[in-house]
Structures are given as C-alpha cells and as structure tokens.
Image 1 (tube, rainbow, N blue to C red):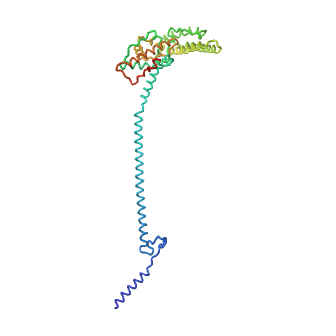
Image 2: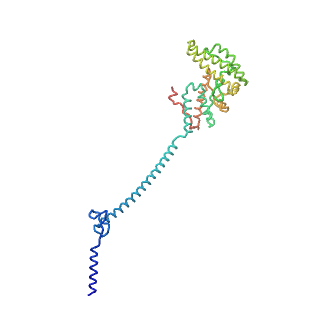
Image 3: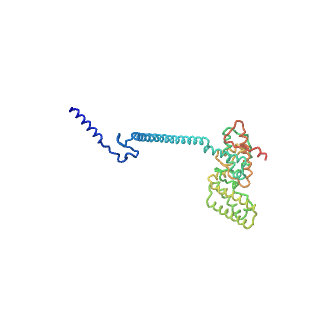
Length: 343
C-alpha cells in the first residue's frame, strides 16, 4: 500500500514539473510573426520554415559555386579567344609577308620600270645628260653575261669620239679636249672671250702635265664670272635676242662644267685619251665602259646627236638580245607597244 502511494506521488511530481517548465521566446524573432522559434519543439517553433531556410542557404551556396565555375569557364573562353586572335593575327602577318614584295623585289621592279621608260619613252634631256645610257649600260652588260648577245649593232667611231666619258659620270673635260680651244657662240664673244682663249690652253697643258695651279683656275673663274655678268646685262638692256641669250647660257654652263673637271683627279687621264674607247659596235663600247668602270658624262653643245645615235643603238641591241632564242629575264624591260611604233 505504501509502495503505491510513493509511485503516485512521484508521477504527480513529474507531471506538475512538466507543466511548470519554461521555454523562453526568441528575443529577436518573437513567435507569431512568421519566423517561428529557434528552439526545437518550443512554442512558435515551425519545422517547415526551419527546413526551408536551411534549403535556401544550401541553394544559395550552390548557386555561388555554380556562378564561380561559370566565371572560370567564361574566363577560360576569353583566354582561348585571345589565343585564337593572336593565332589569326600571326597567320595574317605571314600571309601579308608572303604576298608583299620584299625591298629587293620592289627595288628590282622599280628599276625595271625605269629602264622600260628610258628605252621606250625617254625625254631628250635624259639622253643628252647621259642618264639613259648610264641606266642601260649595266643592263646591256648583263645580257652578255647571261649568254644572250644580240647581233652586232654598229656605231661609227666618229660618234663614239663625241661621247664625254668620265670615271664618275659627273663631268668631263669634253669641251677642252681640243687643246683648250673652244668655238664661242656669238653671245659670249668679247673681251672676256679673248682672255679665256689664252687662259684655257694654259689650263689644258697644265692639267695634262699635272701642274695645274689654283692661281690659274682663279683667273679663269674670274673671267667666266665677268662674262656671265656681261651676258646678263646685255639681256637686261635688250642688246641680245632671247634665242642667242639661251644658246649662250647653255654653252656657258657646259663650259663651266668642263673647266671644273680640270680639277678632278682623273682629268689627266681624260686629256690623255685613256677614256676614249675604240669601239665599232655596241658590245665593244659596253665592254670598254664596264671593264674600266666608266660612265657617260653630259653632252657638250654640238655632240647631242652622238648621244641620240648611241641611245638608239643601245635600244636596238637590247631588243635583239631579248628576242634571242632561249632568253628570258625576270627584269626584262617591256618593249614598245605596236600602236606606238606605228606612230
């Protein structure tokens, strides 16, 4: 009996203690506002909301990881795009380089175009200045080295003797090679002309013997300067016709070049005839010029026709050599179109 009373007392005590247990509310998220309690099984506790919040956290974490991976993929795609762009740029550079003529090719083509024009459409001044002959000289010499020698194109020795030839091609003593005697045009005749008729032979003999002095050259240049000033005043005062004035100026300029050539190191050789070729045709003239490293100097008044004849002979020789059997050159100048020849 006593035992039953004790058990009943214990049960009653536990029941009243259970009813008296206190669960404190969340001070930040009080129940009743939809947040529920953080204490499981406590008043206001919402298991569904708790699980939903946990799922949202996990979902957000997963989305962050997915976004990070997507960012890595995008960054890798960008890097690959950069590499692909570099590769395409490199391929484009190689393509342009393969299809762009080199400096040597461009220079060769340009020289070939110049040669073509000078052969087919030269200006008269380019012929008398020796430019066309100097440009064609290495080309004609190259034809022989390639084994494509055209038939002999004759040039009379009298024409060859009128050509002015020098080591550099800049100037020659051409107008003084007759012992310093010159044939003066009407516009330059006078007091200064008579003085120069005495000084120029002296300069010729001095240069030929290697004894030319600065004093003699100064006297000659003084007379030349006075002659030029006198000619200018005559033109101003209308004492000379325009045509005579122009002829006198041309002659004066050519003579001045020949006088200046007396001071060149090769003047003695020029006066001794070392640069006077003995040639019967184009090939012999070209061989002589090439073997001695010579160039054509500008023509002197009265020798223009010799330059024109030599130019025409060079052109005929080059065209005959080009048309020879088995000859082909990358740098071959174009021949004159048939419609131009008919004109």
